[in-house]
Image 1 (tube, rainbow over the protein chains, first blue to last red):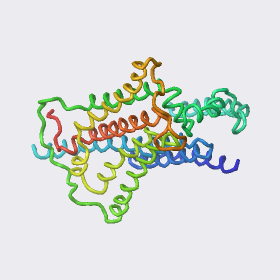
Image 2 (image 1 turned 90 degrees about the vertical axis):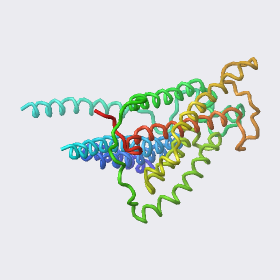
Image 3 (image 1 turned 135 degrees about the vertical axis):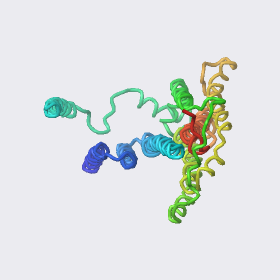
Image 4 (image 1 turned 60 degrees about the vertical axis):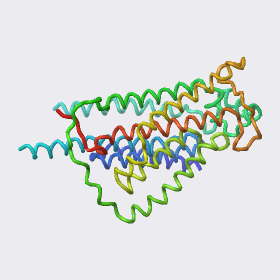
Length: 89
Length: 249
């Protein structure tokens, strides 16, 4: 059992590094979401199912969703302004 | 040159941090070793005093419900802040930027996966919310799960569908009602001559869905508030894309 916990913690460390090393924002959000799921697994393994559920909902769903929404808003604004510039020109 | 100095500095301080981290880990208590008295006390008396089998929610929504009330209003204020920062002023001139061309639907595979997922998500959300006092879960988690349903619909349909299922003005009222109901449940015992946030309702049979008095009720209120809060934030972010209007420069 100790090895399962150690393996999970190692996976979290590797995934955390992966999130930081990902440069494209959209891919980074997906990596962040995966990191959230792994953290939830760790909490579940260390016998905190309540925290694990909160972690899944917040870390793997809510946080990536908010970042995605912010990105899409910025992209839309930028593309709309570019389109308008073309129309005026 | 500066890059090299920065990297060297990182290795020096990173090394110091790593060594002190290792030193701290060595002295950690072993797995499952619990030293505080409160957890033992709560897990011993919690079920008898509150008829709630999930000690975490008995603490969150009863023993320290005052703290949770504060957290609830932190979320409320945070959502208010997001809406204020991204708001569109009344009567401000906007220009039509053209709706997003999302008439083209996603692949059948995505839709075939997302559509059944909506059904499961709704059922799971209500299950988690209603059984908070019995099993891990509770209102907060249920709220986020239920709020993800319209977004799933957005994934397999389009912005138009998202706008139709989430009424902005209704979400505002529902969020305020959810947060206010929590405070009202806390205030009611005051009129009965008991302290703030006393569990004044009948506790019911342990293990029953309708048990543990105000714990289940507060959990449900939190669920309503969180669902509306996340929908509000989501709508606020997507508002320009949904309406196809951006503010005039």
